[in-house]
Image (cartoon, rainbow, N blue to C red; front, top):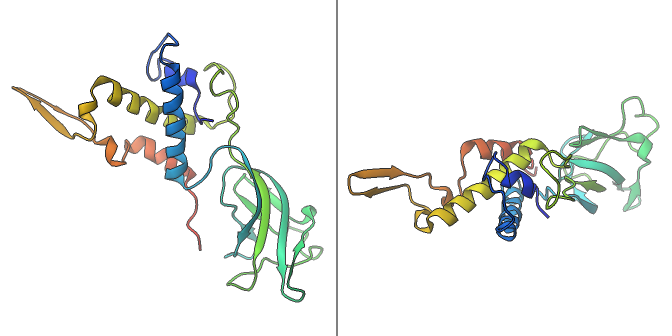
Amino acid sequence: MALGRLSVLKSSVFLKIDSSEFDDELRFLLEKASASANSFTDRNLQLATYQDELHTPFMENRLFPRQYPVVSITSLKIWDTSTDVFITEASTYYELINGRYIQYPKKGQESSATYSSLPVDGDGEVKVSYVAGFATSGWESHLITSAFGVAADLEWAVCGIAAIDWSLGREDRSLLGIVSRSMGAESMSYESFEKGVYPDKIMRVFDRYKRLPKF
């Protein structure tokens, strides 16, 4: 599964390829670029289900699941120090905010929730089960004019990496990692993408999706 559509990569935005001759190679590059996006952001950006993800909260009323965007919360379990078990909190007492964090308890529901706040500073742990990520179904077949489940900026960045890898690998493999090269009186410069640093405009997109550091 890839975070970018084949049709977008082949369009005039990137490679301007009209035939299907190289579709297998381009699919591979999109999947590779998607894996790079996951690595850069320290997330799994494709849609998946997570069970009992363990957290030691650093805020009393907010919990940040490790993946993004969070689509739905299945359960929230809070460690009960008196019984030494996890207690499942009723879903009516917490809410998902902007697909990024859980607000616990809901504003106005503090007195009804089982716990007044999340345990912090190592006083307890929380387990959260949820669904998160972008829906990538149809990435191989959806036209550029079709709706797609991945945010436009993220898809653009992934296709950008795939286009760079295609151009460097196809046009001249000897250019990989080269900063500059001279041929007679002619001198040319290249960006050193293969050192793990893609163009800043692409990396800035990934920065917006990067996982918060663990506290």
